[in-house]
Image 1 (cartoon, rainbow, N blue to C red):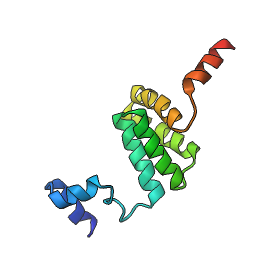
Image 2: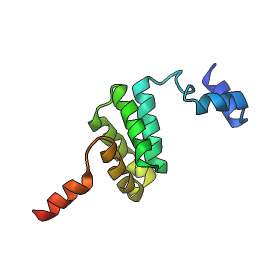
Image 3: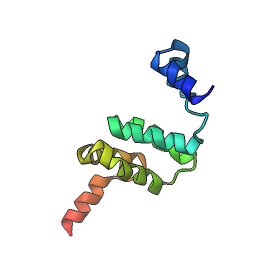
Length: 112
């Protein structure tokens, strides 16, 4: 199915295509797994979400071959779109998802 047909199905809220999108199967036609996982993580950063959601998406990105530095690059790259306050809010959640606690590092920096 080409991109125009997929857009049409999504725009008309086709139930079968909607289910395909919700299942995570849609979007695999042109994007490799790593790119798709980074895009999903960027969307989570944009809309916010719970730490476990970030963790699941970060784990999927790492499993698909993304490096932590690339995940941080994604966050920094979307700052002009989502705004600095949203990015600041996402930064701590992303760090926890990557196994790094920014609050601990922040406290250590304040002691210096």
